Length: 169
Image (cartoon, rainbow, N blue to C red; front, side, top):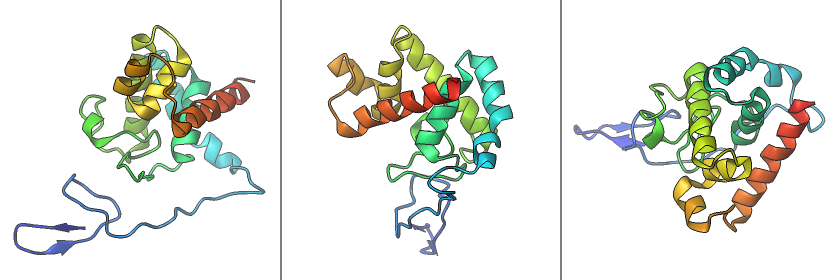
């Protein structure tokens, strides 16, 4: 919800600025088949993931694992903290990672891949630290010099690493 300068109340499920405030939250509808993703969800974005992988030198399987954990392959996903799209990029990072439309799968995957590449460089190739920073932020990981002792971040790293190993097979 956002009230503009003329007093008109605007509602949207896709906020276009940080001036919007959460009005009501809905649970996302996720397609499941006996507890697993539909094959087409896993494969739909493969050409974009492959392109980003080649451009930034980030492993295809790693990108795919991050996307699954971050958004469950939902290009319109929005987190409670405001992260958007397949790779859940925060609005303050859009410009840095060349994302003008976070719901555009190509832009989002390219931005997320660039972010992961920079994190891998920052942490000298230490994947667990790069993933922890993708989830919790570099300042927190730098402060602890390890995966921070937060259940959410610890579980995030475990989930991504598990899926990464599955996708690599």
